[in-house]
Image (cartoon, rainbow, N blue to C red; front, side, top):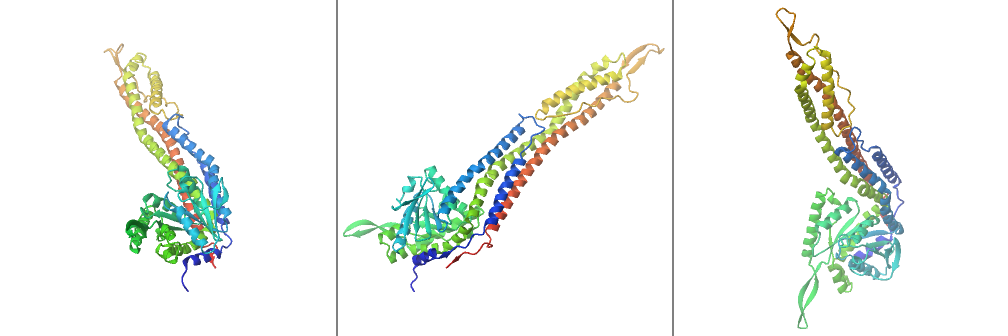
Amino acid sequence: MIHDPIQTLIHATEAFDQPEQNILLHLNKMQAWHQQLAINLNHQRLNSSGLVFHSPIAQDIAALNAQLEHYLDNWEAQLETLQAAQSVAAHFDDKIILLIFGKFNAGKSSLCNVLAECFRRRQQSVDYFYLDAGEIIESHEHFKEGATETTTRLQGVCLGKNLILLDTPGLHSVTPENAALTQRFLDSADGVLWLSSSSSPGQVKELAALGQELRRHKPLLPVITRSDYFEEDEVDGDICQVLCNKNTDQRYLQETDVHTRAIDQLIDMQVDPVLLQSPISTSSQMLKNADFDDQAMQSAGFNRLFDALLHLIQPALAYKQRKPAEALLHHLQEQILAPLQLEVVPQLHQLQQHLDNASNALAQHKEQIMTQTWRSMIASLPSLLEQYAEQQAVNELYSALTQQAQQLLSQQISSHLVDYQLHHAPLEPLQPAEHLTYEIIYTDDGKDILAIGHDRLYREISQGLWQQLDRYTDEVIAQCQRVLTNIQEQIETIQQGLINDEQELQYIAQHLRTKDLAPVSLL
């Protein structure tokens, strides 16, 4: 029996058996994960207690909390994107949907038209449609090749009973709305054909986009289009340009190059390269020029393409079975978790750096507070000693010293620790040592005071004052450090929570993609 790739593909798409889906457990786990994440973020708002509102760290905390509030407020709106893609998938729930994916001018519409003609010539139904305001509208027109760049609509064609091709505006379209539309409907597909023109196959931007699809564990087949060239020939004595297929060696080199560079790119992106299928080279124009004859099907690469599509059906059906869960998973990964990792985590790191800087500065603040207070006190000490010398009022002297030290400390603390809301106790009163008095020098007969000295008092006060300032500022600085440590612990809680959330979602994804779902079979 002669191998007929397209007929084999048609039979496979007509006769596939899709068992009942078994994904409710996975959906429930993901919904519970999402709800718990929202609860965690609401409960884990950073608290700047102990800092004044206008301090830089408090302002950073307020900005971070506002960012988290913004995320939570927009999560519900983001679900509309997911629901739009699911509406397309639901309309074609009993069919295999392949997304035609690639940058503008990669030959997407042309390939869809050629595949449609191949099915038509095998007496298969071919039904074109397009999306308008979320509605599926039937159409009797072939795709206008290149037309998707001039419109924002997504168009498709149903081949036979169960195969859908979605032709999208270019992912790297010059029209931002077109690129956004492509991204919006990626989740509706069960598999992807990644088209790349033979003139510049496998460009970096395309490979980056390809990597995103492979991260989603969606079956993907790279197709190198326009694998042909013009050469000069003589026809009736005239030199003309004749379109020719690239030969087998040329196609092999390009396919190998695209495959090799794609693998390297995927490894760099930490994506499993095993998910990448081998590229296939085709020339839609050569097939059309030969009116779709059997020889052209082989030489233009379409027999190989139909074989590759046949091998894509099985993983596409497996993906289709778990697609509702995959769509929710992608939404949670890309719309919920990724923004937190890309924006909130760097903000946390920046806040952490500010905390470290503030913590390191506390020792310097302590030294400055002590030194400047002590110097001011020592500068005024001689006059105070003189003031209370005649009465030899040591207790009153120490009381005045305590009051002055308290006033100077408050001024220095307010100046150096301006970012903190401090509740410090009054300075413990300075106490003279037992029997400490002024030094009295009497006359020879001991009846009259010749002089009152205070060198010993000066030394004792100077030493005792430094020790008292040291103890007091230690407690003030410790209070500041407790404020910073509290914020540090809050940051660590959020960071660890996000790490745990990511790991838990990865576990859910791994469990979803294991072979515990009911097997998919081709009859």
